Image (cartoon, rainbow, N blue to C red; front, side, top):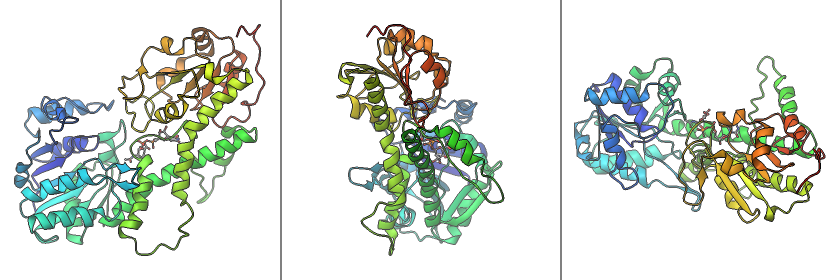
Length: 468
Ligand code: SAJ
């Protein structure tokens, strides 16, 4: 089957780079976007060559503009044009409804129905979004079969090829990372492999089944969440035993040899983002979805649930460190002002999905007199005001807390922070081990750092009479 015209459903972080790259190697790409109040604006923006998602990746917007100018890429909300396509990828969001403990499959179902109503014979449909194992067979293939009357493997081909795009590395990853491609049956796998082959500059294609591809994707993020949780749990132990986590980290990392590895990641103020906070839940809901029998005690938390709980605890630990620091100064937290540095969930991006800082403010607004939040990027949040003037946020702050290691925070000195706080002994809580604790302590700060059991319990150095 010759693939010439491609459709991508969903103009988001994964759909847009996919469409841009398909436009480079195929005749034409149609990027479908619901004309919804929240996202409909993207259609005109993309058709004017403008990127609706922030990316500091070089030349991605230029590639979009070129594709649009050459009429190789067009955004639309008209799903009827699907009938003219040879291949379609689905890149809609697949949120996890934490209240109901189930994946929210409505956006995916809506996309499958739109495709099923308009699809022509011999079309390939590939799900790129991250989903619960079993979804490609049970939701995507079944919906398309029921709506189109086609037969998978004969005049309809269905596969899962999970995206591995990362903030700031959207195009690079698609071309250079290995790509897992799994059909709901073998012919669909082969047809889907042909779609991705031209895009792979360095990466190779790993052929498998749709279900295995779903487990690979959700598990690779569940395992990363687990690795971070290991670091966070160990950091809490180090604080308790007056040990520096980073000394332990270096010691453990020295254990190297044939086949010996210890992939320890870093502790921090919390785990945010759209991937790690949901993918272990998606993985485990696969047991419910297609699992036959699970020989594991029903009443005990899985390893991945425990990891989620440890990572979700870290914003609370940040609050506790702030309160501990204030107590050392005999200050009542309810009379104190807190300055938070960082709202984005990762450094140097405006992406704040599942921000650990949001989790912190949720549990802290009744603990302190006032909480002000700074971030170098512009953020709109319905519950919090995020300011871009550092002086205004830190002015008169009893506590300064670092949540996100943005580049621009690296140049801040204890002297400068102390001067704009106006206090002779402010508390500093370092949530990302960004600073030199000794410099802060010698400048009169009460320093509390994640994993810093070696310095968190030092007595306060008084620099002159404390005016508070
Ligand atoms: N974090 C830590 N300690 C670490 C690493 C991260 O606390 O050692 C925190 C970060 O501060 C952030 C959260 O975890 O709040 C998530 O960080 P992340 O680096 O995992 O970034 P994500 O959420 O964008 O994860 C994505 C994933 N990519 C895809 O799903 C396609 C993940 O598979 C990648 O490994 C990750 O990017 C990456 O390595 O950049």
